[in-house]
Image (cartoon, rainbow, N blue to C red; front, side):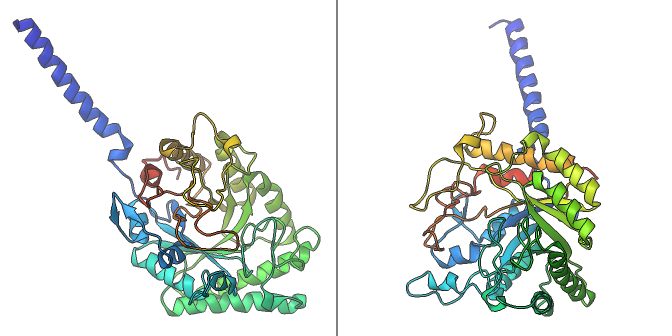
Length: 390
């Protein structure tokens, strides 16, 4: 081997070493960034977690069993979102024999908030004002409130909201965010709270919930930001514009769901919609529900919620595709001036957990864990070095 060859080899090795260092500097996965919830809320809806832990579910990080709240904190979550139902006794009676406790009631939520705050995470409490899921297809009031007059219904909403938050405050568990209703496109506690046919009544009722949050905050060092939550960005401008004219103005955050399955808005257009909602409402904007699949397979017999016709070559249903999609979506939200992204049920792994429709999970293809409960690449989207718009 002559001197010229040795020199070329040495030069190559030096350059290779430099390139390696450059890669280390540029590779975002090697330098995670952690955000505060006040700068940008990196959230995870963990409403199923307590029930999963009680019914055989196991969470792992690199093969080691760990507390899921610890896992989410480690990977950048700064907010935990939790749903609250009024009297969900059905969550107990779907088991045979019935479970000892209800889930997504006050006791379960208190348990989850405690676990989240131990890890230093903020909390978003989502009042559904129902005994079961409330969404654009159904807004059924709690059985205890059926048949009430409009005045009594407002009183019930106000007192329930106030007492719930007062009890949390007495335990030093006041949430940083409060949703007054979940995906309330048609209204809430219907038929009285019908947004389309009884607009004035709807505003009267929801302002009762808002007043309760404001009143609860008076004696607390934590001043919860109030979220109004609408499904899909394409519905938001018209909805918020109409409600502002009707008197719904005292809230802090316009929250939207954005699901590839059900939205007509392209991923590349999300930033424009976020900016438009901000401009129209004069409020902060968050995507408070979203998800994307990491697999087309199913871990159990509970049919998965998945839309293969909406998947693209750019974002296939695999671990890398999910990760890239979430990074792109998060940057779109930031580019529009948005203040947060909350992933819906990223920990709804398969277990012996039951609901009215199946045992296991209809979401195990959309989680941030594999079928063994191990953290997957998608989880790391929360610590990507984004360009955060101030």
